Length: 78
Image (cartoon, rainbow, N blue to C red; front, side, top):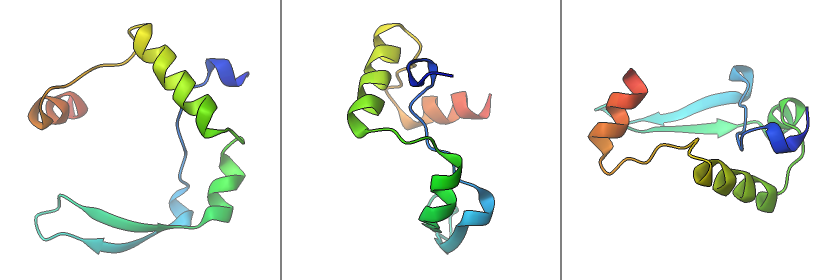
């Protein structure tokens, strides 16, 4: 699959993540990422390509815009 059809995302393998801190209210999580594990599951891509892909998705209407955190959270939970 060409990079033009792929969304600008990064995959994190669960085995490559180590929790370092979680806030008491559960609103923040700080993790350590094993870069070598991440490189195994992600195709090489430049920041410029990822930004261009994200802008294209936005222009094509494939992105949603939220004006409040509450609206974003509702969408994520749906």
